[in-house]
Image (tube, rainbow, N blue to C red):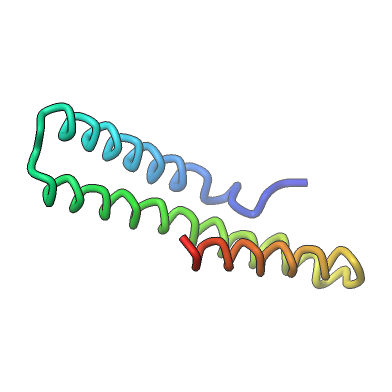
Length: 94
């Protein structure tokens, strides 16, 4: 079974590498005693970048995994819908 994000894997990895670089940059800013507001601006940027990855993964999950399970119906569909709802709730809370 392949995951829904397989077709977008390279783009997701690129975005994650960019976010990783941003986090390293934030670490350097703290080490160099950079002004608080400037650090917070970068934290906000990396947070948005990770939210973008999360939304892309959620979209892939809904259009691939949930759609496929829904076509099968039954308990599998119910489980995938429940998983998706829980994932959305976690994203909204964060």
